[in-house]
Image 1 (cartoon, rainbow, N blue to C red):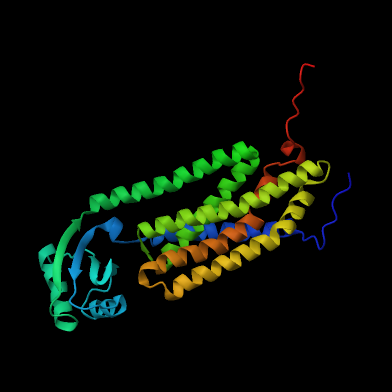
Image 2: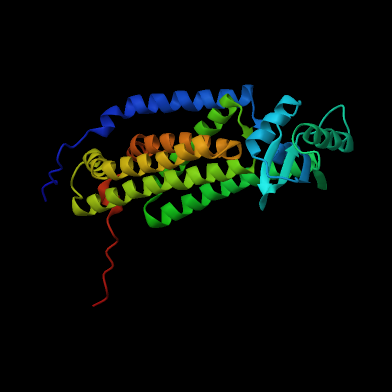
Length: 307
């Protein structure tokens, strides 16, 4: 059977050496950054104070954040609870002040500058032991998701494609973690959720490409593997770019108008979408080719009955 005539077939694999060089550079840089600078662990992992405050009048989180920053609480995290008069304020522990003294100082600052009738409703302390458990649980969740993806893709496709998908996803996660280390964004549970979202997004793109590779392999089993990969990437390119562009619009909106609590989440998604789109086009399929993928390996198994 003759190979299909794809309009303007782009030779993606021609750029695979340059893409692999760029990926290797980004991976090594990310690993060195994580070893050298580490992460800026947020309050979810380091522990700290959690205060629930009741205001007499509504206040925006921006004004409260600016007030606390000027008073010497630059890392305070503020969010509304139910209404604009109920606040949850989270503070990092202090080496010189006790928990009670630190909470009294914060309440005094709000009383003097914003609301004299503010009242402290509840005060809780989260120790570093809980933070260490959260670090372990978060990274175990990432590892479990990658192993589940390996099993799923192996059962659905073939082990070469499964290994390529998991390696590409690991590539995406390491580069995003390196960017977090470089930017020193506060690492909290929200960023763990963002990393898992990046894994799901990148996997979705990769599965679409692998589905098309399998379909073209079954339709044209005698074509060259590189031709089938280039054909499949060309056929799915518009879908990949449109999906990435529309998702980036939403993420940029979150980054610009989502407030400080969603800033880290938005940055992780922004970097993850760009890296995931790049890896689904230039990394995952090229890795499968290097692992020896052949179109005949994706053909369905023919079962002959006794009759």
